[in-house]
Amino acid sequence: MAKTLQPLLGEITALLSSSLAGEARAAARALACDHFRVSFTGLVLRSSEPVSPADEAALIGMARRMAAGEPLQYVTGRSQFFGLDLQVGPGVLIPRPETEELVSLVINWAGGRQGLRVLDIGTGSGCIALSLGRGLSHPIVHAVDASDEALAIASQNANSLGIDVDFRKLDILSPQADVWASSAQYDAVVSNPPYVMLSERESMSVNVLCHEPDMALFVPDDDPLLFYRRIATLCVSGLLAASGCLFFEINEALGNETSEELRRVGFANVSVIKDFTGRDRFVTATLP
Ligand code: GLN
Image (tube, rainbow, N blue to C red; front, side, top):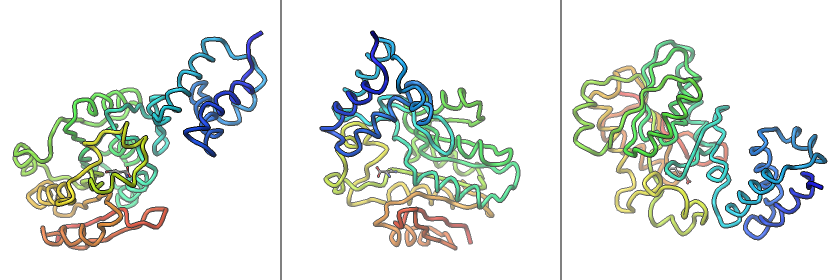
């Protein structure tokens, strides 16, 4: 007789307990919820139903990958962000909950205004751009990334969600970005660029380090504000409309330094905003 879900969840929890310790049970449930596309209540309701051998093999296979350190979202290929079901893979950063707060900052600033022109720089999975495409009123959303792999994932997300975002390949550090910036004029420029200093690697979890893309995470210790300075400079030279607003996610240790850099480049009204954990996590700024 086929196994029921309850003992299978126990087996998966046991598989995950060496790598995830106290979180193993929750991770086993999350895996099963995702696989069967049900809520936790839905999972409980089917806990005494038999599981097909194919589902059992699939779940055990996914649990083994997680036990070896792969993040849940890469194993399932999906991540929830701002109410959107996004496809993710090792070519993009797994969207973080604090980044949802960055999206909320933009939506609150927009205050229901229609037709705003918005740009997301370093879009990755497209999580910010797509959330703004869904959350703002008739916006024009553009998003850029230097990675082909990220753009492929972001475009697939846009297609499957039916959200209109214009994704383009652009390395923001390249001279090509200067040409493009001078003729752009966005109402809002948003970015969660790489901001983790290489010296911070030691304090990061192994499943982030071994699986998430370095190019989305790390900056050199001797120039951690590299992307902030570049984006702010492009904004001042035409990328941002005179009445527009710049929104950054930042390294929690660099709130003051990031604000100073933005003032130096020519921004005014620079504010540092904390995330839900109380850490300095966002900077907003407008042109004088
Ligand atoms: N918040 C991410 C992390 O801690 C980093 C995101 C980024 O570098 N933009 O892993």
